[in-house]
Length: 389
Image (cartoon, rainbow, N blue to C red):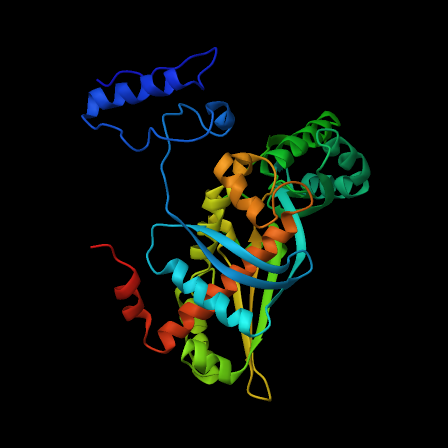
């Protein structure tokens, strides 16, 4: 039977405690930690981010860019940090950034912003549930005040209502400032719901603060349609000449491939008709201290394109549930903070800027991979850059 890992109730974030855990695991497994025991930051920096700290796992990081963005919050050129173990990935995004720069940059904007928590109330019958819904609508201002008692940044925007049988889900929608906000809205919603329950709704039988309707860290079509986190759009128009010179493919060829790919995605029941939104999002998430599990929601998305009358190619991507932060969580860890700072995205007032940069990154990856498939350069590029044999 394996021994329990050493733990200190008074101060567990010390070199001594980390070393004790490594030695325990080394003794039991026979593996000596020569790399994951090396790090450059004081251990108090990880308090609140991890438990049983024992070392670090180092992920290779590359810079892509410059990326030219003509956004509302992100304006100018940026080097983009991308942490990954997949060969070819950074090179591919870099190629997409090259053509975007030559075309005059990528236009970006955040079109919606909301974080959600969706408790469920269960009643004796559907009539009680319906009347409760009416009561919630008429008492919104009081519910809003109770929710916002717990936070200086979160603001309750509205409450969506969804009925099934004798149940009623309430989808509390908040703006959350520069934080991703899941914990913020959970605390706020709990406070509001406790006040609601204290009003003794007629026929109430049961209640749960979470019942999977907000689909936290899971994809849902509801969030794709109604937004969770940032709904952000990136778009560009490319000339035929530029596409042929840089991407080695014509607008018509890439457009035709995208039509086929969209059809295949619909047939397969995919949550995304693009090529690989998750690659760019995950690489930037790891580098900048985002909650990587949010890729489950953030990687859903939509491609849309047109061949214009003059033969140019309009290309856009929409990410409906991009969950990012520039403050709190892992963003303050030393290496992650450096990566945010190099893009001017650390701290307050920067979250939309980061969202727009990530959307632009995703568009570059879509252009590059799509063109590689259409030009039959996909396999050869992986042979050149990837697959460490």
